[in-house]
Amino acid sequence: MGRVLTLDDVKVDGMTVLLRVDINSPLDPASGAFLDITRIEGILPTITRLIKAKTVLLTHQSRPGKDDFTTTHGHSRELGRLLGRPVKWVEDIHGDAALAAIEELQDGEILMLNNVRMDDEEFSRSNDSFEELTNSRLVVRLAGVADLFVYDAFACGHRNSPSITGFTYVLPCVAGELMRREIDALQGTARNPERPSIAVLGGIKVDDSIAVADNMLRNGSIDAVWATGGVANLFLSISGHDPGNASLDFLAAELKGKWLPTVESASRLYEDYSEVIHLPVDVAANVAGNRLDLNVQKLPVDAPILDLGVQSTINLSQA
Image (cartoon, rainbow, N blue to C red):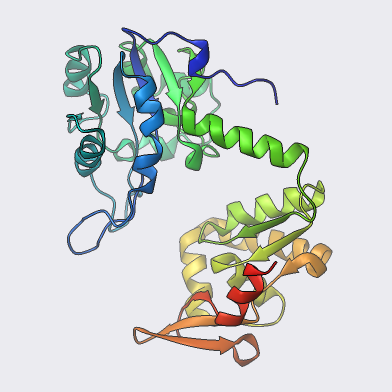
């Protein structure tokens, strides 16, 4: 990878800067309160670098159909609390209200737009090229009132959408501080990793995790994979330890049309690398709200599997 342009390469004083971040955060289902603000804290170094600019924040919270799919009003208040100064918010993304609020910004002020995933083009145009995304509503309207695009949303950097890749042909683009830090870490790991090198993969975005594991194992950048979460449930099924319908049906519902291709990819990967794909020896299921630890030999279980078992956790900690 060539050198990535960063905030060191531009003078932002007086500029109107579009800053794409990922502060998608877990929310309490009952109160809507933040359960973890790590991602909001993570963008503070970039915000600090933009102290003399007019900063317009683009971000998302969850996705349509989820219980925590909501506005970004609370995110603006939490960011303002951390900064110790006001963060403006507008219940709009790229309409007249948003444009007016941007035009009114003074140097040093911060404005957060509403959840960009409330614009249907964030998902409907995910297969467009970067050049094609330049005519999306968000890019057409916001590029006209901005001088610079700063990308600091590392956690969704693998996605293609107007707010992530749409500005590449129409505005100067640089990486924020979080993005730079993550790229430096990844480049160091990829170029000269310590050996043995392992990847711990989990979560419910199993399709992404399988693709990462496939790439890293086949190009030799890692020596082994330790599977947790949904990734472990899928590999357990492939290896002959059926986790049960509750766990597999959940993954199938999450991945929808990607489920069967993901199962096929994972099956090929496990066939080729089963000796270095480490699976749990025990798991923890949620049985009527209580934790039940089970050896994988006792699977399947009707309840959803939500965690590694105690012995598997010990094994992973010692890897």
